Image (tube, rainbow, N blue to C red; front, side, top):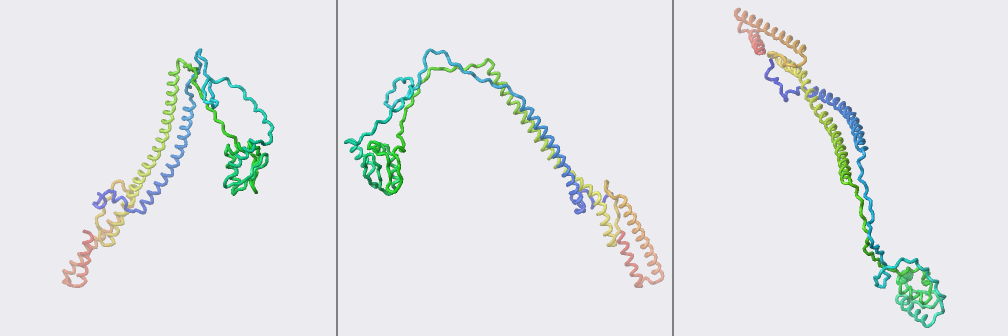
Length: 356
């Protein structure tokens, strides 16, 4: 029967922490490595099977939606062509587009007349103003004297009025004094804006719809949704396998930890009891040795210890009986007050106390 100090409880399971924890952690570590290898192999096979299943699902072609064909309706009304505004403000009916007429070659330039003098005056008013100074002459380069002359000339060439004045005065080159020379022909042309007017067309496009068009659309999207659902289900199954493996590994590790502590406790328990009895024997106490609990290990070793303990107790009892006989004989001989008898009485009391 187990003693009251050795009840099975979680507090008393770790009697020898170094031995029990080291053995348990070693066992849990080995099982974790084996479980990780098994899980890696299982997930590899599961991933391959899932990918093959998904590829098979995606390989099933769904019925395609037919394209609608457009046919023009029979309408006697002629289509109205586009109208281009020539910039004069009129919005009459547009005429059929004619091929562009090539531009006529420019007439030969005549020497400046009174109009040429007017053109030179216009050039002077537009070009030879502060901060620039110049002296325009017909058919001769216009020499500009100004600070930042290149920027000034570039700015003037961007002005259509200034460029037009140069052309009327037959000045083809503008040169900065000590700077660059620019040709008037390189000046950007003025932009011409064309207004485009599009009238409503009388052509009507009527799509040709097959008779089973609606059923085809329904079948197409049913197939697409079914494939998407199948793919989600297979991905979900793969995730379930992963979580099952993780949960199994955790449960197995915890179970092995608990089992290892309990199993090592069945070995540590008898050794702990033996150490307690040996400590009491060292202090001169011979308590009753109780039996091991059900399921404990080292039963044979513990039985040998109990036999040895019982032999020591028997010797102690024999010593007690002998001491009692010696003391009784000494008292009968009238030597009860002798110091040796007093020591024998102390020894007898100590031995009797050790067997209580």
